[in-house]
Image (cartoon, rainbow, N blue to C red):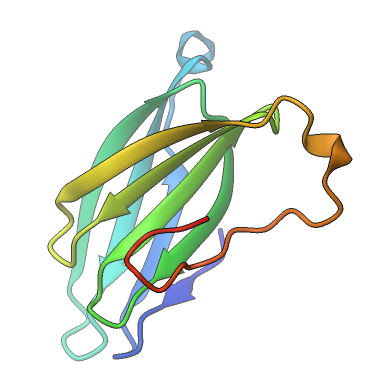
Length: 115
């Protein structure tokens, strides 16, 4: 579970918290944020149907963040959260022929979203 950092030094970690084989197709994910000044840890969980892989976590200067999950590398789920862990928006992206792309990465588009 890699840690990501905000500009202010706060840490964020995202990991799968499904507990049984029956949850494989309805997976829960947990976010832990650690305040670099106080050491206080805040957490929240959210569900994402069929996401089985954490692709990336992007952090922004305003302490908001995006979490990108995937399922079998053809469906991508993008969740944008505020600094206070409120879900701002989510989007599902279908890429049926991902193997045709030479470079696969998530890019911060500079406007609070990803492409």
